[in-house]
Amino acid sequence: MTERTLVLIKPDGVARGLVGEIISRIERKGLRIVALDLRTATDEVARGHYAEHEDKPFFGSLLEFITSGPLVAAVLEGPRAIAAFRQLAGGTDPVEKAATGSIRADLALETQNNLVHGSDSPESAQREIALWFPGLT
Ligand code: CMP
Image (tube, rainbow, N blue to C red; front, side, top):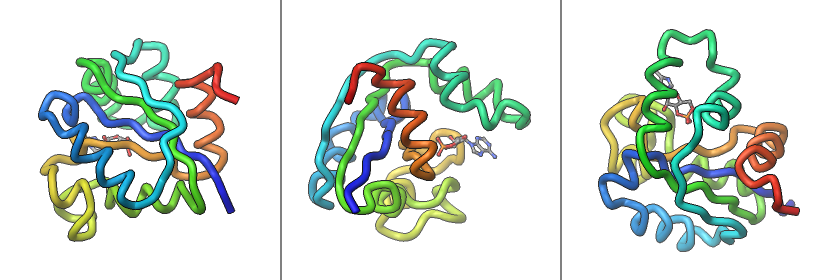
């Protein structure tokens, strides 16, 4: 079933010059890019995006990180796009959880600065796409 997912290449990925590497992996997997934008997240969008984490001890640090510089926001489309991108990304902790060969396992060390975000469910994808790309139909 064709679905869409919201992906972020976080500020660490942009700062480290890994945008091309990450987009290349997305394209090689066969996912289609339907929206792509380099921008610095506002505090409001960052809070909306990470609303489910607002009670976590790392929330303040996460907001600071995600608004710290330009990131790439994208919408990807394809069969099982949500699970497909999460497979490409690997688990949240790049060392303990991400599978060998994934973006996080190959390219990241820290749980916060883990290079990418991908929606975790169809409901999250719908909410996150509306938040980052309100004009997209
Ligand atoms: P992401 O997939 O974008 O979803 C929530 C983000 O919070 C996660 O990636 C990490 O960047 C960050 N995060 C999750 N758990 C922790 C943690 N224990 N410490 C610091 N940051 C975390």
